[in-house]
Image 1 (cartoon, helix red, strand yellow):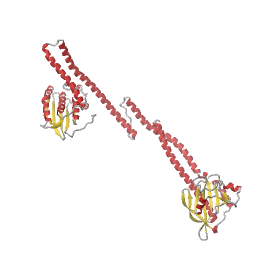
Image 2: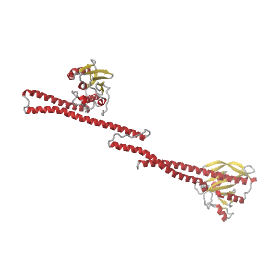
Image 3: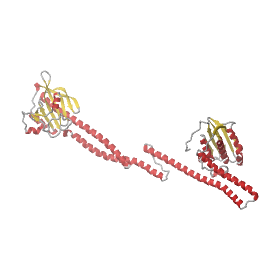
Image 4: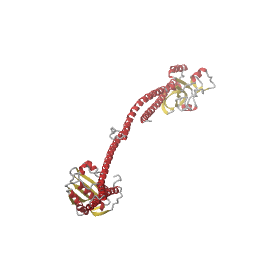
Length: 535
């Protein structure tokens, strides 16, 4: 099922369920109120009839119903004020109340009917007991099962006293086939001793269908409301679902564009909900992918450049060696030039060996196969050896080489690898400085030693600085005009790998046409930094 249909169905279920719950609660309340109002009306009828017959002395009495008991002012008359109600009057009263569907039964103290016909026993023992105790009996539905012990016997079960004969007219009016709700009120009088005496009961009822008429109207209104609610909620659900799924669809379309290689796509969002957060994360992912893709392309470009450089570096000595060997083979080289040719071949061979060894050295360092032998030593001695060792290379470019360090800089590192680091950094400075100055410094810092190699050569732009430690980074044309020892583009990559293997740090500060400064920090034992494998 599509997401839009799931949203529509969810909205409909929630709205319709809420409407049904509210509607049925309202119907139940309406039903309860209808019965309460009907009982109150029937009780007033019965009370007024009792007053007409026995007078108007009031006393409190309990009213029994399915809900429980409540206080009701039960009329109590006196034997002296008794006035026999005229059956003709009762017939006219019943006729007047015919449109309300009201039935009236009068009973004597033995619960035998005296009106509309006499001699019938309508009440069950349970109801008789409650009436004698002074309680008003309420019956919601004489055809129901909730109050079977109280329901009057009006469905062909009424018994006629043996002294009475059943008439067809009495049977017609007495027995009821429709469902009725009843109020049965006891009648008491005061005796000469001021006590209460049970003298009969009045049973007043109306048809259940009349009581339920407002409830049926409420049900009809609920049905109409459900239809209207369904139509309106269907339209609103579609609008809301279309809006929500439309936002998700935009993300789906954008994802397909990214999959097809378009890394410029962005999904508009307002950062107001979870879908907007997803869109924001998607945009960030696309930006990250774009950067990664650009980085991969840059690395591929540098790798291609590196292969070209390596091929060029290897082709030159190989061509020289091959030409000299052919000259020796065909006696094309004069006898006196043979020693010079052999010496040239040896130098070119060593150059090839250096190129291969640097690549192998970098791989060993990068993969952790090169083990460090750390110890505590005075780094000032090694710094002092750099000047005579590299002075000749510096003088070829017209550079001045200076060392600024105290007599003792105790450093915890692999001594040979530390020398390799400093030589690579100094050679790199010499390569890109012409008629300039190179200063090598060293000093102690808390929990470590710090060294720097600064030059005032051609420097680097920020873009160049980003890639300076990449393995395949090679001098661009602006820097390549200075020859030097940077044959492979691996020197600084080796430096970075060695520094991190030591748990140290390296940073570079450079400005184009003003020079560069490389600063390394090697920490004492126990203070080394930890680097993850992907760095």
